[in-house]
Length: 292
Image 1: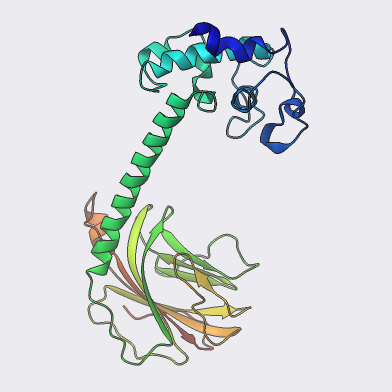
Image 2: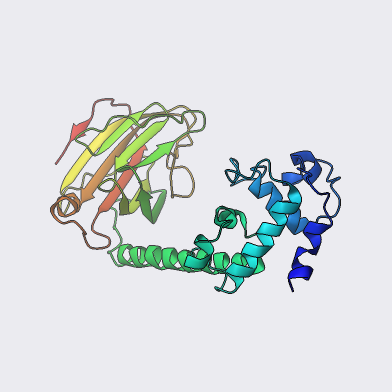
């Protein structure tokens, strides 16, 4: 078995350290190096830092020959295979060539399978987490507007830094300052508080061609600001299509919020605790108005 797995390495020239071009890493090069399989080349590219995500390579192996790296890689692969492809296994981590473990997947099918299985598990866990939040948002009653909007869209929106943002092409940049820590606007940019640093909110966005009647009942906070649309194509992350429906010009954005107090009161608020109603309509007024 040892002679079989080391055969590709033995066919490489002793002492040779192949270049990125010779190995044809990431499809850039001529692939002229002989005696190495495609998996061997991918492994060497990773070890030498010629291929993302191993751009810096594996420390200490940059001047080691192709042949020696392959021999050590196959040895480590055999060891990892005996442990179900787990490069975190104690025996693998204690091996002299353990530093190669994080570049091993291209060379070692058992490691590749184990890493794919772990990636699938994490993805399934993430999907279940998101679905749970989305079910909580879907359980909220749909907003019944007093006049018919051109569009009404509901979504569970996520944030890493407190706000959900909207941008028009060419106006991406720093989010604007918030009025009453709820909504802020700049030319071509919009920001709305949605969660305490990281989290989700249940959001309804309504687009109108005229000003909708004011609604404050049942909402903890209601703030309205002016918004200047240079292109008429303001889009909010997670919401399909533009929320401005009258083309370029002046708009008002009215934001209704409930659930912020609960988010600040408990470490782990219930799913769907934050609800937002965002209404966008034409209007020339510039000053913000705090209704509640």
